[in-house]
Picture 1 (cartoon, rainbow, N blue to C red):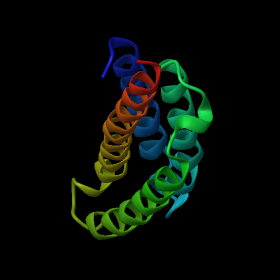
Picture 2 (cartoon, helix red, strand yellow):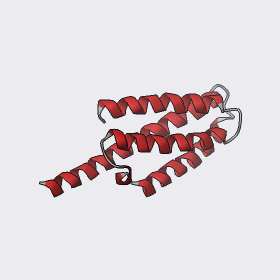
Picture 3 (cartoon, rainbow, N blue to C red):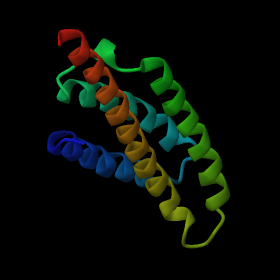
Picture 4 (cartoon, rainbow, N blue to C red):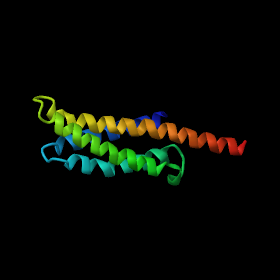
Length: 121
Protein backbone atom coordinates (compact mmCIF):
# COMPACT_ATOMS: atom_id res chain seq x y z
CA UNK A 1 0.00 0.00 0.00
CA UNK A 2 1.27 3.46 -0.79
CA UNK A 3 1.54 5.95 2.08
CA UNK A 4 -1.38 7.89 0.63
CA UNK A 5 -3.70 4.85 0.46
CA UNK A 6 -2.50 3.69 3.90
CA UNK A 7 -3.49 7.08 5.32
CA UNK A 8 -6.89 6.85 3.61
CA UNK A 9 -7.40 3.35 5.00
CA UNK A 10 -6.54 4.48 8.52
CA UNK A 11 -8.98 7.40 8.26
CA UNK A 12 -11.77 5.12 7.06
CA UNK A 13 -10.87 2.59 9.79
CA UNK A 14 -11.38 5.28 12.43
CA UNK A 15 -14.58 6.62 10.83
CA UNK A 16 -16.20 3.20 10.34
CA UNK A 17 -15.13 2.05 13.81
CA UNK A 18 -16.61 5.12 15.50
CA UNK A 19 -19.76 4.96 13.35
CA UNK A 20 -20.24 1.29 14.24
CA UNK A 21 -19.60 1.89 17.93
CA UNK A 22 -22.05 4.81 18.10
CA UNK A 23 -24.82 2.90 16.30
CA UNK A 24 -24.15 -0.32 18.23
CA UNK A 25 -27.35 -0.20 20.31
CA UNK A 26 -29.50 -0.37 17.14
CA UNK A 27 -29.38 -3.89 15.66
CA UNK A 28 -28.02 -3.98 12.07
CA UNK A 29 -27.85 -0.18 11.82
CA UNK A 30 -24.08 -0.08 11.80
CA UNK A 31 -23.84 -2.69 9.05
CA UNK A 32 -26.23 -0.70 6.87
CA UNK A 33 -24.45 2.60 7.54
CA UNK A 34 -20.96 1.21 6.91
CA UNK A 35 -21.90 -0.23 3.48
CA UNK A 36 -21.96 3.19 1.70
CA UNK A 37 -18.78 4.16 3.57
CA UNK A 38 -17.05 1.09 2.15
CA UNK A 39 -18.25 1.87 -1.40
CA UNK A 40 -16.95 5.43 -1.02
CA UNK A 41 -13.68 4.03 0.33
CA UNK A 42 -13.27 1.71 -2.66
CA UNK A 43 -13.83 4.61 -5.07
CA UNK A 44 -11.47 6.92 -3.17
CA UNK A 45 -8.81 4.19 -2.95
CA UNK A 46 -9.01 3.59 -6.69
CA UNK A 47 -8.71 7.31 -7.43
CA UNK A 48 -5.75 7.69 -5.04
CA UNK A 49 -4.00 4.96 -6.99
CA UNK A 50 -4.42 7.13 -10.10
CA UNK A 51 -6.83 4.80 -11.85
CA UNK A 52 -10.25 5.44 -13.30
CA UNK A 53 -13.19 4.16 -11.29
CA UNK A 54 -14.13 1.56 -13.87
CA UNK A 55 -10.77 -0.16 -13.23
CA UNK A 56 -11.96 -1.28 -9.79
CA UNK A 57 -13.39 -4.83 -9.64
CA UNK A 58 -16.87 -3.62 -8.66
CA UNK A 59 -18.62 -6.98 -8.97
CA UNK A 60 -16.31 -8.70 -6.54
CA UNK A 61 -16.11 -5.61 -4.35
CA UNK A 62 -19.89 -5.59 -4.02
CA UNK A 63 -19.81 -9.24 -3.02
CA UNK A 64 -17.10 -8.55 -0.49
CA UNK A 65 -18.86 -5.48 0.94
CA UNK A 66 -22.29 -7.11 1.23
CA UNK A 67 -20.89 -10.47 2.31
CA UNK A 68 -18.78 -8.69 4.90
CA UNK A 69 -21.83 -6.83 6.17
CA UNK A 70 -23.67 -10.15 6.55
CA UNK A 71 -20.74 -11.77 8.32
CA UNK A 72 -20.42 -8.71 10.57
CA UNK A 73 -24.12 -8.90 11.43
CA UNK A 74 -23.84 -12.56 12.44
CA UNK A 75 -20.61 -11.99 14.38
CA UNK A 76 -22.03 -8.94 16.15
CA UNK A 77 -25.22 -10.78 17.08
CA UNK A 78 -23.20 -13.63 18.55
CA UNK A 79 -20.61 -11.45 20.28
CA UNK A 80 -23.23 -8.97 21.45
CA UNK A 81 -24.17 -11.29 24.28
CA UNK A 82 -20.64 -11.61 25.66
CA UNK A 83 -20.20 -9.10 28.49
CA UNK A 84 -17.45 -6.58 27.78
CA UNK A 85 -16.90 -7.80 24.22
CA UNK A 86 -20.25 -6.98 22.67
CA UNK A 87 -19.83 -3.24 23.04
CA UNK A 88 -16.64 -3.27 20.96
CA UNK A 89 -17.46 -6.05 18.47
CA UNK A 90 -19.15 -3.71 15.97
CA UNK A 91 -16.19 -1.35 15.85
CA UNK A 92 -13.64 -4.18 15.63
CA UNK A 93 -15.46 -5.93 12.79
CA UNK A 94 -15.93 -2.63 10.89
CA UNK A 95 -12.20 -1.90 11.10
CA UNK A 96 -11.33 -5.48 10.10
CA UNK A 97 -13.64 -5.25 7.08
CA UNK A 98 -12.10 -1.94 6.00
CA UNK A 99 -8.61 -3.46 6.25
CA UNK A 100 -9.70 -6.50 4.24
CA UNK A 101 -11.16 -4.26 1.55
CA UNK A 102 -7.96 -2.22 1.41
CA UNK A 103 -5.75 -5.28 1.02
CA UNK A 104 -8.03 -6.75 -1.63
CA UNK A 105 -8.15 -3.50 -3.59
CA UNK A 106 -4.41 -3.01 -3.33
CA UNK A 107 -3.78 -6.49 -4.79
CA UNK A 108 -6.34 -6.14 -7.57
CA UNK A 109 -5.28 -2.63 -8.57
CA UNK A 110 -1.63 -3.74 -8.60
CA UNK A 111 -2.65 -6.41 -11.09
CA UNK A 112 -4.60 -3.88 -13.19
CA UNK A 113 -1.63 -1.50 -13.25
CA UNK A 114 0.72 -4.33 -14.22
CA UNK A 115 -1.58 -5.25 -17.09
CA UNK A 116 -1.54 -1.65 -18.34
CA UNK A 117 2.26 -1.54 -18.05
CA UNK A 118 2.58 -4.73 -20.12
CA UNK A 119 0.41 -3.21 -22.85
CA UNK A 120 2.42 0.00 -22.92
CA UNK A 121 5.78 -1.80 -23.07
